Length: 164
Image (cartoon, rainbow, N blue to C red; front, side, top):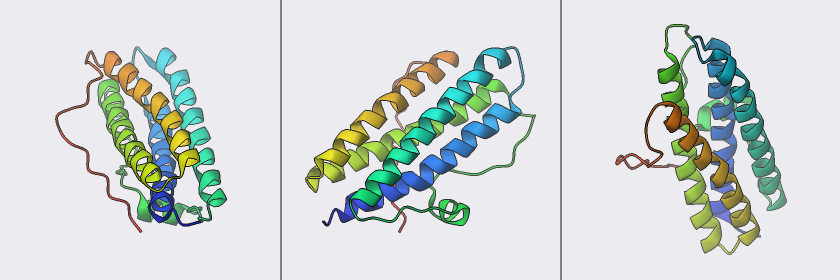
C-alpha cells in the first residue's frame, strides 16, 4: 500500500494520544479546588474522547499495513509530550494550561497527518484525522475559556517531529 509518512504520523499519534490520556488522568486524580465537582467529570469525558481517537487511529494504522506501538515502553520512547510526577501543589489553572498545551500539540500533529495523508492520496485516513481534529480544537476553546483566554493559537509555532 505505501503511505509511509501517514503510517509514521499515525504511530506518532498512538504514542502521543496514549501519553495525553495519562496527562488527563493525572489531572483527574490530582485536581483540587472550587471547580472540582465540575471539572472532575469533564476529565472522564476528555479521557473517553482521547481513548476513542487512539483506538480509531491504531485500527486505521493496522488497516493500511502498519503496526501500532502497543507497550508502555514504546509509548514512552516515542511520545513528544512531557512526563512529570503528580502533585497536589499545582493550581487548577496550571493543570488546565497543561491540557491546552497537550491539545495544541495534538492539533498540530493532526494537521501534519491531514497534510501527509492527503499528499499520499489516503483520503480515508485524511477524513478520519479531520474528524478527530475538530473535538481537539473544541477542547482548546473550552479550556482556554476556563482560563479566561481566547481559543486562538499562540504565536509560538508548535513543531511536530515524528519519531521513528
